[in-house]
Figure 1: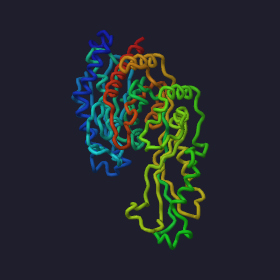
Figure 2: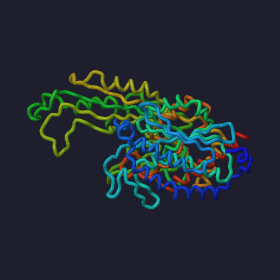
Figure 3: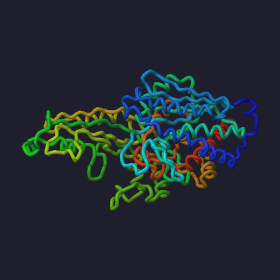
Length: 481
């Protein structure tokens, strides 16, 4: 932004801003986002041949091409590539102050998953009213569009803002293991952010702005139990040779109480801070039984009827999921054979303040120690991702969020922890302890990130974009004093 632009009145017209953003979403974002959905840009954990297949490269170029069309003064757009690592899209917009704001998102996606409704699919964009279906649109393909549109909307009114750096990575769904190398390589260009805006989180409803105050960490990997060199007739061997599946169940019971889902080992637990406990109670009162609004089969129920307990389970307590399995034939091909091995993918969510590196090492020791019946038990860990607990929010940011949510949603904002993980936040929190954070997103009820029938709620995308623009403008005013 030029000096002349910076000297203009910085009074923001919210109604004009909202019209600009809504038009941008309808005319420019949705068409490009639909084309993005068509790209099967699976994260490297799910596409070992990602470089050869080229889908991540296509997605990065798609974002780059759209960004270059924006009427943003001084915008520089570049795809940065380090050898053997997923590329990042780096966008730099000069500002009217010495501060830097870092806006973050990702373009890589989760795999296809089964269970899509007829007419829907992971790589098939389908719009139904306010919903745009397809993999990755809300998690987190919209982020680059939203970030640049927020900046463009301010410049359309001559409203000054700080320098903005938009960083869109291609490895988030794999734990962001490539990102530290880019942060080191780009350290001089990233600078020291005064504010970090992350557009990769969730929303408890579509009625207000949701601000994430904590994220769980994650550790996991492949747990494999082998008891035979080859499969044998189950009639001949059962009762003599232990089942690899039963051994696996026994080992998992060291970690989880299968009756309640509680994680037995206290190493994986932390004490919930008093301020976060107060947030849990406030958000639980807002959501009530809607906190369990998931597609449970008829007659099924959640782990508890108490929203506070469910919220704590989802934000500050560890929880185990088994997300994949090997060693099983399909039911149609399952003969009477005692299988030689059983393997599962373990995903253990951690409280925000648990050390993920230490937790991963402890998990390996716990699962591999003293294998029942002398079976061969191996746990191959994935790259661990640490959680994050937000620093205290500055008064200007708190006031800005209150005003933005009231203006564009008609309701006050909600502040809450999220059960998912964004490993980049822990990294940034360590590197930039003085930074303020706005972690928000569009993935609300039934949007089903990572699962079948994933969608983005388009009005929420537009409103979140307007809120981000408001915060950028308010940050400049607050810094100027």
